[in-house]
Length: 121
Image (cartoon, rainbow, N blue to C red; front, side, top):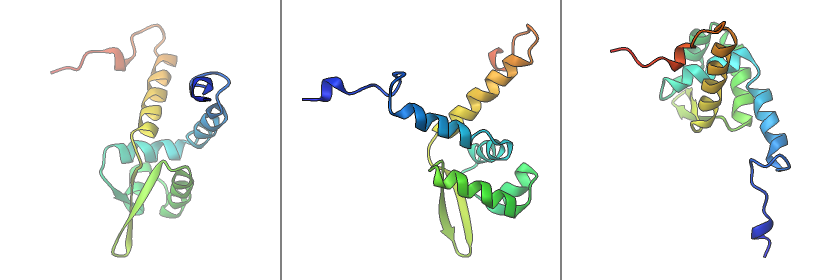
């Protein structure tokens, strides 16, 4: 049986490495990162609300949503004449959150980044 020879997805020779690079490529756009962040805090949002949240035109946001949808990072639901968007799962949100944390490290200038501080009551 070939089950023993199956390569782990985290192995450097995994077939998923190229696909992971594509995921990072899709998330390499500032507007798409902002869309992921906006959707992370909401159950579902229409294009106009997302456009307002990210400070872009609805038509521009629609184009970004199409890319995210093709990558299966967002899904849609029809509500009458409106299309509502939501994250497909938590993975894109986790990737963006970790990238933000890494960005905090790059500008911390030797200080402890905000995400390392205990929550304040």
